Amino acid sequence: MRVICRNVSVSFVAGERTVEALRDVSLDVRSGEFLSVVGPSGCGKTTLLRTLADLLPPQSGQVEKQVGPGSRSAQALLVFQENNLFPWMTVLQNAAFGLEMQGVGRGERESRAHALLARLGLSGWEHAYPPHLSVGMRQRVAVIRSFLSDPGLLLMDEPFAALDALTRELVHQELLDLWEQNHKTVIFVTHDIEEAILLSDRILLMSASPGSIVAEFEIGLARPRTTATALSDEVQLLKRRIHAELGLRPREVTHAS
Image 1 (cartoon, rainbow, N blue to C red):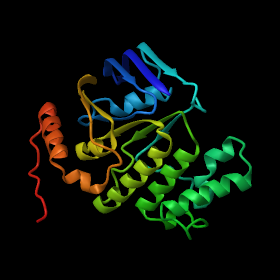
Image 2 (tube, one colour; image 1 turned 30 degrees about the vertical axis):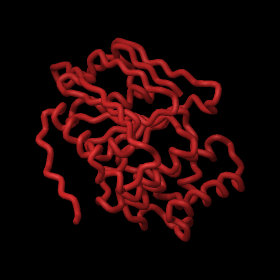
Image 3 (cartoon, rainbow, N blue to C red; image 1 turned 180 degrees about the horizontal axis):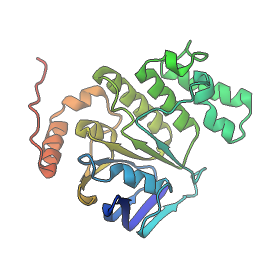
């Protein structure tokens, strides 16, 4: 799915004043592209995703979604930082929920869910309930559910922010492996610049007050990417450039000897 925004603006009423969350945001997301959006807190990243998911109407501008001949769905699915699993459903039921809503038979949906649960290290947990899982395990189930739902557009709002560094590296690789299978169109919001570089084809930077796109970076790193990619000079250079564009002072990077 291709996504085109033309001069999209969104405002909220907060008490006696109007808060301008997005101003004249224009972007063109290519079909099958993995696009990340980076910017400071309050710059409108989540508002942008909610607008693209048709949860918020823009006050002005236009959002257009073009479904190509190879696309099977015009659906946009939003994945939040909180995994939003149903606590009364098992891991298997949660993973297969999107397929159930599409009318896929129980045998087929459970077979497909079993396959991805096994691939992402969750074999043996199929009949457990979300409160019995770690945060990282719950987030893996949420990612599996989103991919099995097979939306035309996957919108991800800081889905890995609550994970520890080691779990985040694991889930990054799992997400990339799943994305490499079908090159679904993904728009991924994050505060983590390195995460954005490792996952993305392209990164958009947003500024706050009001939210607008101020810069764009094409990420030319070869795929497939691994955790070792993060140590490359190319990634470190990109991090410094993006930090500079955002007006941030980059943290010192040390390499293990």
